[in-house]
Image (tube, rainbow over all chains, first blue to last red; front, side, top):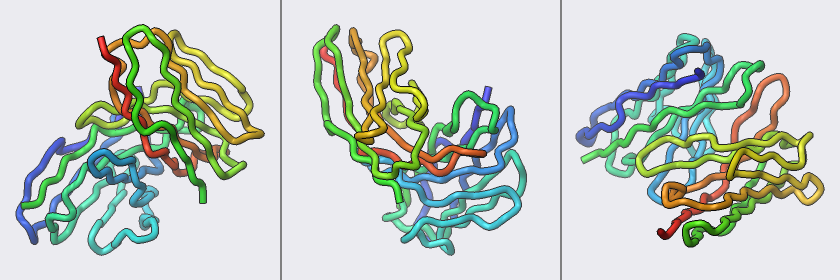
Length: 117
Length: 114
C-alpha cells in the first residue's frame, strides 16, 4: 500500500516549452505532497510543499513562476516546468506525506528525468 | 532550519563485510529519522526508520542507532551483498500530528565488491 505513481519517467523537451509532471497517490489520500529536485551525484533538494486546495509553499531560491505546482485533488499533484531551459534538466521526484496512522511518514515516486535540449 | 550531515560520501567494502554510515542533525525537535536506498534512475526507497523514543532498531541485516543527546544516528548493514550497492540517504523531520518536511543528508555511495 501507500503507492505514489509518478509520470512520465523521462521526458525530453525543447528549450522554451513547458513540461508537466504528474504524481498520483493510488491507494490513499495525500493531503500534502513534496517536490524535490536532484542533480547527478547530489542529494534531494526540496523545491516546494503542496497542500491540497491551497497554494504551494516554495523553498528559498525556487522560482514559483517557473515551477508551477498544482494540488487540486487529494490524489493528484502536478509540477509544470515553464519555459524550460537546459539548466532545468534534472531528476524530479515527488513524495507524499502518509496519513497519521501510517507506519511510515512518507512515500516517494519513481522520479522523472527531464532533459531540455 | 534543520541541517543533516552525512559521512562518508563514498564507502567501499568487500562482500560479507559490514558497512556503517553516520549522520548528525542540528534541530533537537527532529524526531523521525528514515534511511533511504536509491538506485540509479529511481526514487528513494525506505529501508529502515527510527523515532526519537527508540535508541536502536533492527531489521534482518540492517540496523539503525540513535543518540538524541549527541544528535546523531547511524545505519549499520551487516553481511553486505553486491545488491546492497546503491546510494544511501539519511533524513530527519519533525513529526507530530503530521510529518513535516524531510531534510536529507548528502548521500553515501556504497559499493560492495564480490
